[in-house]
Length: 152
Image (cartoon, rainbow, N blue to C red):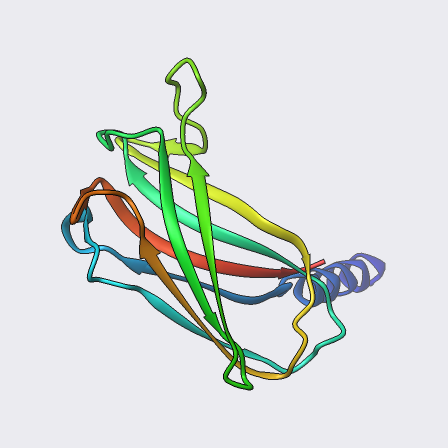
């Protein structure tokens, strides 16, 4: 009987600790060819403005991606209509050319921390747009892009 009770308690603890993400979504870039007119967006509903979140950018790219980095523009619209614009550089490779991130086959995954302690100032819907800012109209090798907010 004690073993069953312990298993139930552990299961409850695991379930209660398992959902520390406010939002975690990615958008597939068709054929891993990101046209600069294709601007993925994410709408995130925030209710609790007292919680700190780690804000990540998730990018999967092919090993055939020809650059060691990626420049992005992130446009954020707040629930009150205010808009901010940020330029972000994502580094994918070490100086010696080895890829960073996790890999499987010819695909690499990068989880890039943008803000370790983000606190949303307003409740409501935040609209995030991510625009590729490289000097090519069509950027080959980016398979998908997403954002993630994890509770601290």
